Length: 132
Image (spheres, rainbow, N blue to C red):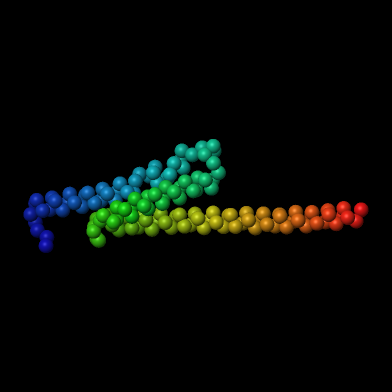
C-alpha cells in the first residue's frame, strides 16, 4: 500500500537510493571496466595477455553484480541495469574467448602442418642417406 506520508516517501526514496548505489558500486568506474588496458605498456605482454586481463576484469564485475543482485528484492531499482550489464559483459567475454580459441586452433593447425612437412623432409633425408 502506498501512502503520501512524507516520512514514508522519504524512507522509500532512501531505500531505493541505497539499492541503486549498491548496483552502481558493483558496476564500478570506466577505468575499472577497462581492466588497466589503457595504462598497458609493451612490457605488459602480448595482446592475448591484455585480452585475458580484460576478461578477468569483466568477470570480476559480473561477480560483483551477481552478489549485488542477490541482495536486491525482485523489481528493485537497478535490477534491470545490473542484469543487462551482466549479460553484456558475459557476451563480450564469450566473443573474446571464441576469437582467442579460433586463433589457437589456427596456430595448432599451422604447427601440425609444419610438423608433417618436417617429418616428410626427415624421411626423405633418411631415405637419401640410405641410398648413398
